[in-house]
Image (cartoon, rainbow, N blue to C red; front, side):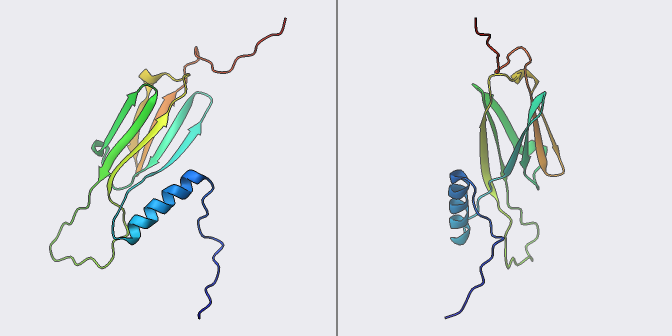
Length: 142
């Protein structure tokens, strides 16, 4: 029997959703499959919501962004490109495949002014808030 050192730096899921995502990603990777699930950061500022999708290796034409009933969906596909026949791959750790991420937008956004740009492997979506549709209200007691 051998002793394996405990690694406290290993990724520990902080939410149930992260646990399920990691389970399926790890299971597919172990069976030889490959999935591509880009990581996402969502930031709220005073004037807008920003969604940053980490998707290196794609072109801006590879993304499809749709808005349907306050659901913003970002989808695309990272394709495996074997450029030369004389290459013998010994290991492939890069993930490939189709992906789709959806976000429910709050009611206080101006959907007509959503902006997207792709720079250095990060798709940046800016969803401006609509000042007229404030979600927070103060109600005075009479």
